[in-house]
Image (cartoon, rainbow over all chains, first blue to last red; front, side, top):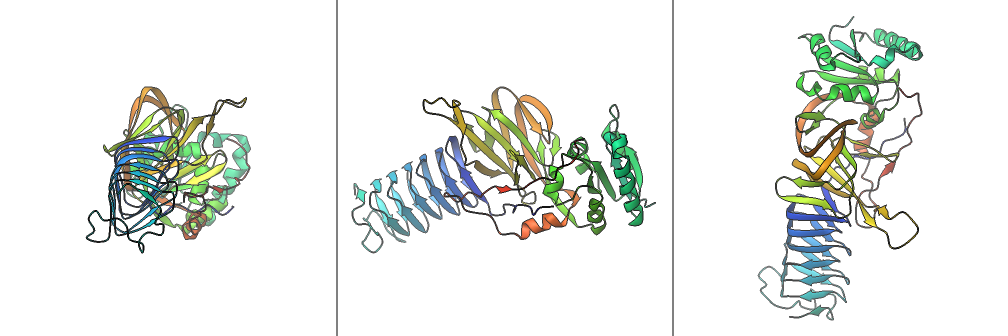
Length: 134
Length: 283
């Protein structure tokens, strides 16, 4: 008998291209989104928003990587990474952030434990020329 | 004869072409001192009534002998019994045997003798138990999860709700039947640009969502394959019953859980593993 494939053990949720999710979307592990989500997203793991994704939702995650479009507030406990293709329309809060050149952010950004509406510092942002209306 | 074992034979085993195979199995079981009472399924005989009439206080193990279709005929009520379930596959299709790490034929007796028992979850579609999956191959039906959100396909596609997993286009796709969760796998279709090719194509990356309770909903009546048994309707309730079944599994299944996860797709989704299935005689 041939060896069998590994059984998936980590709780990973994937919303791929061509699929639409509406409502209060909660996950216990890592979530990958490359489709459409409308409502709220929350997870205690890593949230990855891919280049094809269109998220019209408030986002709550432990850490996040955004490469697609987000219309809503983003609240990340630990690290947030905005890729060059990211387009975020909403307020962002996180502990630390990496913002690539070309990322678009329309809203306020708060970085650090008790940050309010300050712009990212040079140490926290890898790219000072990222577009932000703040 | 060992009174703690009961064997349920599928009716196709009465065919002369299986005579030698069945005789070999019975010899092997006698050698292992596991030969027990035999009940035979028949076209106009209720599988449930047959099994219920054979299971008494002394019986600890019910062994299904046949193929995956034999399991389909019995799995929907077996979790109601306080017994351990064994499976001896003797013919194709034997996808479930693959998933359970059980070899086809006489070698399965060794798995039975080793008696490595796992407690696994059973899925429920309305009031019917299912072991492997519920599948809607081409549908516009959506999925409502835990009364919290809905998952819909923009242009249609395939929807599967997996417990143990299944075989899809010759690719084995197992799921974790011990996590207390069902796994929804959605393969959406998207329209092609103007070309001479077929108008729609299936995307390579599936959507995967883990959940406990859900509902398949459709505006039009749809057919759902539940462990290869077909049901139709507009709405199906889905749930999981954790640890519902004690099942004897093989070494192949233990190897699966020891292997590292196969990752490698660009977005972190898990890569399907290709498994070549043994060729054999169809039932």
